[in-house]
Image (cartoon, rainbow, N blue to C red; front, side):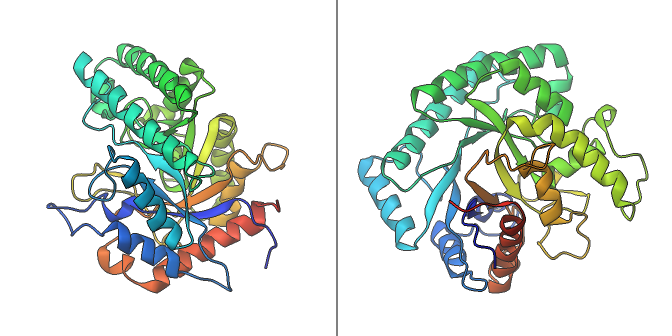
Length: 343
């Protein structure tokens, strides 16, 4: 076994909510997600922590200090830490009205405030506040230039809020968010905001779809009808994309993808999160992660101190199996063995 102890290995808890609910399967409780995470073990190695969504029914965004203490005590009782958090900004779409944008920034401020309290409590040694635009690519496409202007102006305000709380924001690179729906548009957004308080969250399942041009065919890198048996073409596409977005990357999700899109419940279609050992998975997880974790010279960037598995929209029956979490943990360990460090 590798002696590396960084990056820390985290599991996301929001897959217990995302894609669940009245239109799909029952929500999996926060406690059950913590239990599943804490029970997983591979050759004596366990998860170090969880990344959490700051939304009901798992978390009360407006909890008081007593609520913060109870949350800290609960997570620490499982021998876990908290890392990155997801800001629930979706009732305030940036490409909506002026009032919507005010809602977006208000919810972001509440998220940064809670994130900062968790950091001060000692349960959250590292991690970012994850955001998106809460707006669809279809809405963005009605006026690309105007949409980008509004998104950039709003995110600049968001960065000022994050700075006030000592937090950093990471934009989720996912095809279902306008202004973040292609790798080139995502890069344009990051460069236009140009703030040390905004970076990029790379999820291996979502960014694979960037190379296929879903929701923006003009930015496709892989050729039409690409044969996945020819790994050299994929590696070249991955290098082109990661060379552009890696310098902005401050949060990272290990994942598997079969090059298709999927949605469940009320969640729009986006990159399908496959199990780590899915035979249809197109990613060589440990090797492909290196394109994000190492620079163009092959040196470790050490740009973030934990990596996370995000298994959104897995069926509940799958998420209740111990093997599911052990296989996921094994994949994270392989990434750390290949691209981690000792500290």
